[in-house]
Image 1: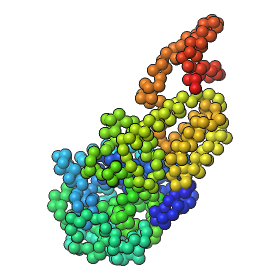
Image 2: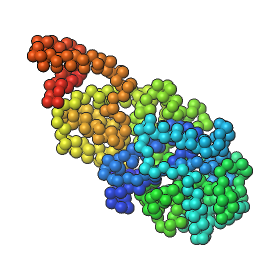
Image 3: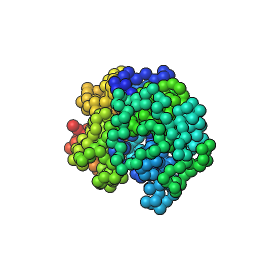
Image 4: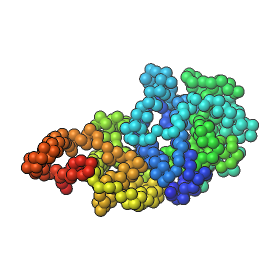
Length: 467
Ligand SMILES: [Zn+2]
């Protein structure tokens, strides 16, 4: 497999630390509100990456955190506490908010056919691990105490910003101007590992620590949770592109300072979903969620299909026109797949050949659009029905479009007459058994008029719609 690695800014052959095994980590959601479809674009692309690794024969262990503790919109003692503002908005406790929105997040996963990670760990489960890592960072001289908080000292690293050659002084460009600088910091890019003193006097979740009662900074959770489940060597870390800085930069800084060697070899970043006015966000315009799309009559898998038509490293622009087009194409594609007659012996050699073609094409930096093109090639190929079905089922383990799964919507639409067809076939079978061949032929003729072609096989009668 070939993957674009943000760390080297190159496409590279993917080689895991241990042959055949992949340790994969995904930054999870902050559970203070519903996920918008822009966030979910990242999770769909990461899901395809995971499934593609499995398709290519790897044994994958994937870990995800759930950010259910405070202070997230910035590193310093600035910004808003999203969990707390969510709780206030809904008159609930922070933990009630976390539970509710964690469930909602994974309900969206199910609707979008995203596989659950092997391990899902809420940050609040791992406070002792956070404290341990911070203690080690203090011992090693990578952290300091100031203003009753513990900070990571970025000046102790040879290179702090690893995703390119950007001048470190320029990194803060883009940070909101109304944010006041934290004067406890020794260096501009230093970040909080543990808060005991913050502007959030009423912080709901607090824990005892060697530095006083408080709570962890944001970045520490991903370093600790990944190491807890994947050890000190990770193969691939995923997230949205806006997490590259500061979040992933800080994860690398503290993780490598802690373990004393390189931590993760490949970084996979998914680009933004934009609306027609720019980057999609929760605070701007219509709040686009999976539930909202469903209310408007869209199959969530049509949204999945929409995202797969483009490449994960390109920004994608959402509009209802574009979604309508994708939904229409998806429906037609699925109808065609469902109509493939279940006939003939599966040609295993052909299935293998098509499998390898997909692994190579889509395996070139997760080229999902080419995967969809290949689906059309299979539909057109000179293969018997059951072989086509086997190839499509194989591809769908990666694309996750449920192409061969008869859903209520598809059935209602394309097979109101299925019951009638089945009844006529049963009647014909009975007639044949009673050796009433004239009647059997008559029924076959009637079905033909309806556009239904019958095939007598050893397993019984199969039928398909005439092309
Ligand atoms: Zn993270």
